[in-house]
Length: 350
Image (cartoon, rainbow, N blue to C red; front, side, top):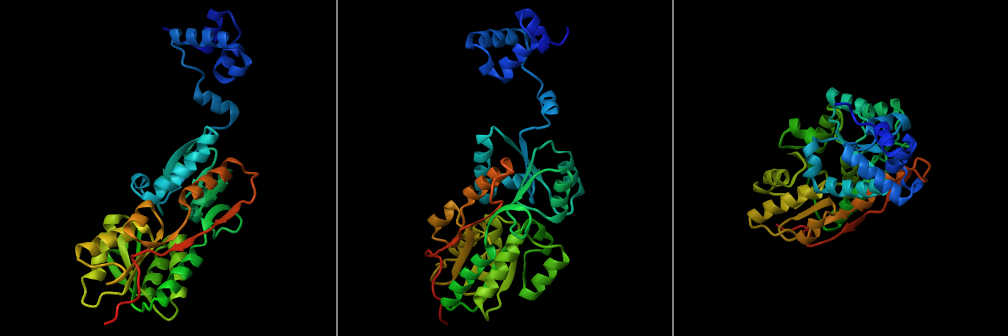
């Protein structure tokens, strides 16, 4: 049985191939009645429309956009921040009838880079933008929009994570906190283990292993600056999840002299820390202070003091810059603000 083509439909209908093409691709060029008869006949003949691959070859465009993730693919559907950011990005792409292709590109993983080399996309949105990735995207001649404000020549949408860290550190210093632990959780830290580091040892380890993510380091540097003379201890969690936060909190809470404040570099970790404090009968804001970053929907309900950022808007603006290379400005710094809630209070007295 021969394959049914656009030409086959045109011959049966007694019209040109262009007319059949217009029925599928440019309906405004035909009367509603003629278009309906062509589509009905095509369906009866088993013709589903022009080849998407052929159309892409002719136009040179796919109307699909890659989304770079620095974590495994499943993480995009588990992490509340990623879900909100992706929903904002999807809003922008939907307005142009675009689609997204999720591309996990883990640090140092050559097979992930190869997937990026072969991806049929018109541009790339990045929640990570390490140099090998940015260089590869540039080599392909594709537009790249990230959330990394450290790129002075690139296109990005971000908040000032360093300034947010300073604001949070200054707030804790005013409350009298001198024993502060910072909870860091990213997948590339799994090999660092669930353990405690001095600030200097942590920084040296991160530098030796190739970095921990621009926002993590910016927040940490700002926090240290805001705390003044206080030198925080670093706790590394095995991943950025609520359960990771609950587990790592045990290193701080199950010691005789627990810290007066636990600063988590993401809300999802902080929510896990709050779970751990509840398990131990401790009251955040009285027995110790707990803070986060991002202001997820669950954070308000949990009474978590955190740094708010407009996550959905961040994703939407990334999408808009990606869709319109002529849009200005190309570097957008969004506002953040400290949301003080019940999880923080003055440092407890001995």
